[in-house]
Image (cartoon, rainbow, N blue to C red; front, side):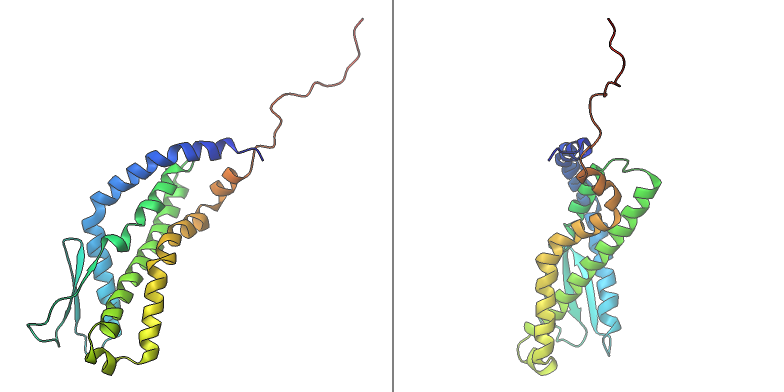
Length: 202
């Protein structure tokens, strides 16, 4: 099957857009660290009583504090780079599509990026809950049931592996389905003009 010229241009641009997306992500890492950590803390504390959890972004890691732990307790940390590096994939795919800076496509990028940000926040939330449910020894066993431990463990695994790598593609396909379909549809127009039948000249 013939490949659409738009798809060919997309594939040619993709290596360059990956580099550009990585540079943008590197510039935004401190902002993303703070944004993901801040919303995850709000989400965790909204389900706590009393509200004891505090998250702090330091050196691209989220430090997990609880006010009810002893002052000499070790402070768990979670790497934030792994949480939001999939932003690179979404940005690279966006930058490679045609008419990417049109108002319509920019609005779609904002919506797709926001949903990706929510999944990144959920991933960090699940990491913190797994620390509480699985990594604090006797306290975890007393505080969390076997169902809760399995629940948080499964969804952390899902958002770590299949979710982390598939979410950017899913949101890109969902919000930019029109240009994607245009790239997948080969050009069906004939390349040579068909000569109309006419009378043969002597």
